Image 1 (cartoon, protein in one colour):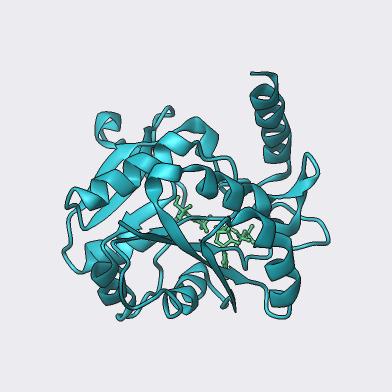
Image 2: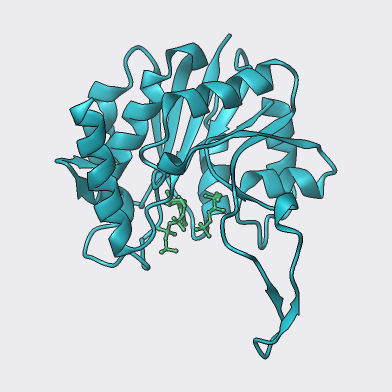
Length: 231
Ligand SMILES: Nc1ccn([C@@H]2O[C@H](COP(=O)(O)OP(=O)(O)OP(=O)(O)O)[C@@H](O)[C@H]2O)c(=O)n1
Ligand SMILES: C[C@](O)(CO)[C@H](O)COP(=O)(O)O
């Protein structure tokens, strides 16, 4: 059994702010990207044999050196990312080995602290036959749909809503088919599969798999590291 991990890490992090691209921002002395790669590597039951990381163009050599100590025996490939997340994933997918891979994970560098059990659940579900798998957590706010003027249209039944995280897992040919079609407006890879009519299965995610998006998320990241260190 062999898994490849695509890590889109080419975003600028406009909402986070700061000088460096988001994946290079440090928490506890390591970049968010290093935390993400270390997390995936720790999921030994996932059988990771290859990492393909999409990075801001021009940073490929620096990233290769930075990540090399954390990938263990797995192969490391680094590619320049694209304008949108979907473009970065597609560029990385082109470098996933064509043979011998049973599962492809797509994992945001910005979801740097995903617990091992979430990663392993996603891979296990793909290996059990699900073509596409996403980790999810319940929505805790009441969600409303609004029109262009900000007026509430309706309130969807919250029990049928979930928040979607990464890593998302795919049977390799399904992900390739999904990315072969126009990806405009897709904010995750499962959405591309949905457009093909592929059934996307959910597994339990974790609050620790939150996406570092805004400055206060860095405080949560520091807290998670401190809590894990204290265990
Ligand atoms: N062109 C892009 C845009 C995003 N990403 C990656 O996709 C993940 C999720 O994206 P998001 O958190 O939205 O990151 P940014 O696009 O960097 O954030 P912002 O929208 O605030 O600029 C991140 O790991 C980010 O690096 C990417 O590889 N290529
Ligand atoms: C892929 C993702 O993290 C799943 O929640 C999310 O869709 C990324 O969205 P963003 O618009 O790039 O923040």
